[in-house]
Image (cartoon, rainbow, N blue to C red):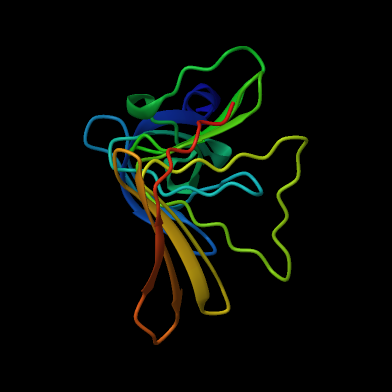
Length: 180
């Protein structure tokens, strides 16, 4: 009996269902046809995830009873990123990564990045660069400006006001140099 309880204290399976919320709940496919349904799933403070079906599940069973199983970890080898010693990354199944490298922080995504701040968003550094391939725009309380590369050495410089039609300013017949 004690040997069976010890053997059943830890288990490994696969996530087959997940419910998010203040207390995430998991469904885990375990041994053979075993299904552990509606199990508490623990996550570290400051980190949250919603694992995809098929992710591994490591669970512990209180008193060695499968009926008392709780999900402890949900790694997914299908979407691992390669790291150097000491590096850390937050990543998902779409290839989006926030990577704390040995040389700095790298954010990679093919999607939109939005930064929302309260009363102040401050960018600070000895050298700050903003580089756009096609168009650079900004506005202040509905009044805005954008510059767009048209072709060759022709640039379009437009200003706008919310509710008004964009008005062209003289095209800029220059070819700005690339920054270092």
